[in-house]
Length: 290
Image (cartoon, rainbow, N blue to C red; front, side, top):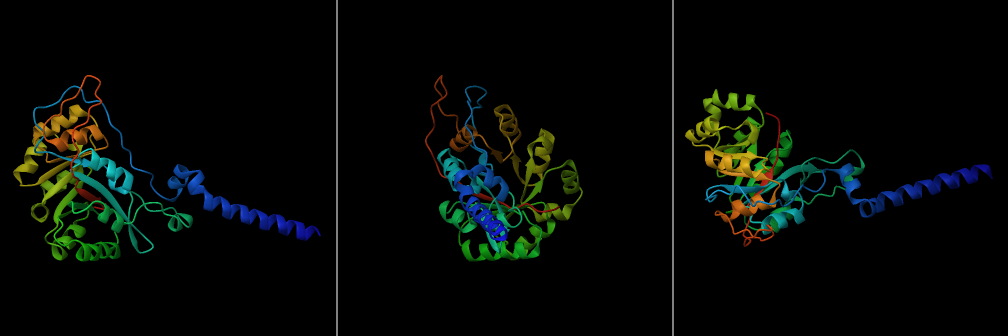
C-alpha cells in the first residue's frame, strides 16, 4: 500500500510538471520566452520636440531587431522604418528570426520566434540585410539555399564579421550587397590595413560609438556604405547625419518616423502628432565570428 501511494504521488507530480510546461507560455509568456530564447525586441516612441535638422532625406532608418517579432515588424513599418533588422538562427534544421538560439532541451521544442519564411512573406518585397549569427558552414549553406530559392528580384544585403561568410556570398550570391559588421576599434584598424577586405565589401555596419567625422569620411572615401548602430538619442542621430552616414539603427519609433519621412514632420506642442506611414525594408541579421 505504501509503495502504491508513493507511486501515485510520483505519477501525479509528473502529470503536474507536464501540465505546467504546456501552460507556461500562456500563463507566463515573458518568463518562458526568456527561457526558450530571446524576448520581444525593445521598441518605444520618444518625444522629439527639439534639435531637429533641416533634412534627413539621405539617411535610412533601421528598426533595431524589429523583425524578430511580427508585431514589432508591423509597428516599425507603421512608423516609416526604411529597414527592419532581423536576426536569424537555426533550430532543428530550420531558420528562425531571433537574436539568440533556444536554451537546451525544452527551448528547442517550444521556440517562440517566427520562422524566417514567415517574416519574409509578411514584410513583402522589401530589401533584406543578412548578418551571420552562427559560424557553421552548414548554417551558411542553409541560408544561401533559402535565398537562392526565395530571393528572385528582391534586393538583399548581408552583414557579417566573418570574412569567410562574405567571401561565400560573393561567390554564391554576387548580387547580394556585402557589409562588414564592426564592433571594435580593432575591427576598424584591421579593415584599414587590409586592401583585399576593402575590395571584398560594399559597406560597413558599425557600432556608433566607434565613429567620428574623420572615420566616417574615410569610410565614405573608400566608397563604402556606412550604417551606425544602435542610436537612440536625437543629438547623436543629428551628429551622424551631418557626418554623412547612410543609415541609423534605432529602437526609437520617433527617430524612424523622422528618418523615414526625409524631412522633419510638424510636431504639435504636446508631441503626439505622427507623420504619414510608409513602407519598410527588411534586414536579416546573422552575426558570426570575425
